[in-house]
Amino acid sequence: MPDYTETLKYLGPLMSQPSIAAFCDFDERVWDLYRQLATQHGPITHGSREYLVVRMMHIAESTSNGIRMTATWALTPPAMSLLRDRYEQTVRFSWLIRNPDQNEYAKYDRAIFDTINAIVRRIDPKTIEREEAARGHPLPAWASTWTKEDRAKVREWSATKLETMAKKRDSFPPMSDTPLAKEGLARLYGAVYTQFSAVTHYNRYSIEMVEPEQGSDGKYALSMGDHWPGLLIHQTGWLDMIQCSEACKVGLRQDATIKFESLFLEWLTLSKQLQSP
Picture 1: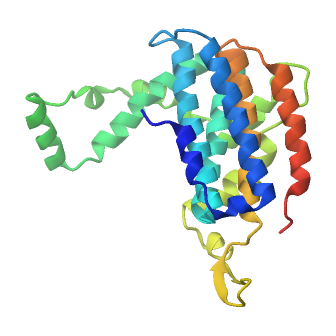
Picture 2 (picture 1 turned 30 degrees about the vertical axis):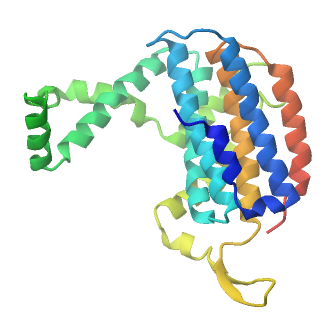
């Protein structure tokens, strides 16, 4: 099993900038607090709600590390794409954790069948033949027997748009009476998800973000702006704080509200170090 903390040894040359080094160190302390509290939870039963939470957090942490890795090497476009993903992960996770309607978990679980069906329907027939030959029996044909009602049922999760989900999530009562718990996610939908989706999808807008920039040696090179790496890592820390605090308090029942609030105050102080575009 890979140790994600090992990747921090290979962060890029932008770590020489004090502000970026501080942002990376801060974010790692957020995840370190989560890991400590997750360990204190004790054994987790396979198939339990806690098991779902820790697996979701595994993907979240690896994405967060990916942002820090690419950003510190000035690989800005992939870092932007990953921050878009990190935002979506946080919105969907927080929607599930905060939602008083437990049916949302059932919708989330059922969505797996819609995804499997969409994948299988697009696989080359020869690939299916090879898979069936390797298995020694045909792949299940359950997807072809779905009724219209069945299809609607498994697509309930994807029917809610991400921006709508973020706004409704923000309308739920905060989990505690603290500034971090009251932070809203919807306000960054345009700045993070919409803007960086343009980069992910290679939209024309994203090309306009690339401009010639003169280096210290006097030479010009194409760049998306040297203010971006620090901003992307800093914003990742904010998303990580929200998701880690909610995962601990609700998903794993390990309340560290005061500790996460202390981190939030530190994050606000670090915000003053951001380089303006």
